[in-house]
Amino acid sequence: MTTYPDFVIFMTLPWQGEGYEHTQRFVVSELARQLQGRSRLICLEQPISLISTTKHGARIKRVLGQVFKNNSLKVGSQNPLIFPPFFVFHPHLTERLRFPVQLNQWLLSLQLRATFKKLQVEAPVLWLFYPWQVDYAQVIPRQLLIYHCCDDYLTPFSLDSRLGLRRRQEQEQRLLQQADLVFVASPGVKTLKEAFSSKIHLLPNGVDHSLFSLARHPQTPVPKDLEAIKGPRIGYLGTLSERVDYHLLHHIACAKPEWSLVLVGPFYAPARGRNFLSSPVVQGLKERDNVHFIGARPYQTLPQYLKSFDVAIVPYQLNDFNMSSCPLKLFEYMASGKPVVTTDLPVAHQFAHVVAIAKNYDHFVELIGDSLSGHPPASGEELATVSRNHTWEKRIEDALAFITAALSERRGDGHGTWRNLDGNQGQKRPLSSFARGKVV
Image 1 (tube, rainbow, N blue to C red):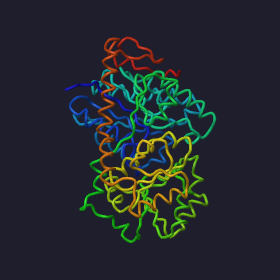
Image 2: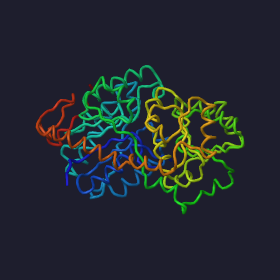
Image 3: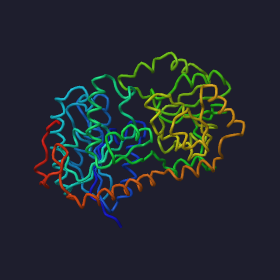
Image 4: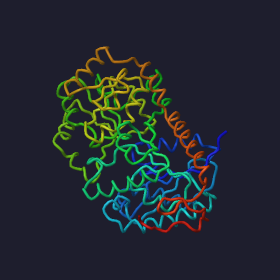
């Protein structure tokens, strides 16, 4: 059995309690399962900062409760060990202001120094998910740096200012150049990042097939909150954010008032995007009798909702962000065996033999009608067969194969050495010599 160094994964989202699941948690959970008994995994979840206290009050209460109850991070054999770092300034402020970085770096170094000493962590594999994290990679000793780029973070959808764009471009370029491995979720993202790294590997999103295939089981119940909604039910599962084409949803609802649009998931609008919630099109959808906003539901119950759908849809806008994305729901829908209709996203063309891809609004409605009339592009079993090849288990097996190769390569070039603040290799140092916050 292959053994691995310890892993430190720095998430940009909370581990739990936000009403939705995300790629980062799926990656951490499956990686922890596969590394059990072979390596320890320390998960640094989304930092808690002074600015985020009002937004994440429940999460802070949970974290502080753990701190006072346990007094410290418990050392155990179970993966992952969840560690919530405390920052003074929210990380996104560093995209506009540089001075908060040094203080946050110093605080992170202080917290990790004690944790690494207690757990006897020497030179872990460091796994990052977002460009701003490169500033904090400088203060974490490691023997391998991974950048897992799930989306194109340099699109206007992801930014709120030109200054933020310039700062994030600089951060991501540094991260791509320093990383020993770069995982990207789609061919589109791979094309965009290849100019800055030759170590890019495709690692698309995946699915918990065993969970979502429950939608095909006769014993899986239909949720009671959908019993009063008449069919046919055209369903969407996921966060209702700016990514969704609400004009398309409005077009479907108006064109086919006899259909019920069932939207399962929470609204999500960052500060820069709150206007879309009060837009006329969203308000118009809320007023229609055949549109049903169900809200967030526990992740384990989602197969029940999928079972109630007659057709599952991916109504994403065709903007730069979505055009390079790899939607989780595409794989979840396929695992459920439900007919799938999506907008013309590039990643969907990999599955054109089993999903219906619409060219415009009217075509979207037409394709839904085809599936309802018994002419879907693929059977439920064909969809499920495709889904079995895209599980998180297979994704992490692929990732560990890439990591094993990278570690083997480094063993011939100073395996286990620590990194200096500028990202270059240096001499191995004791934990007491953690870096203390130089900003490159």
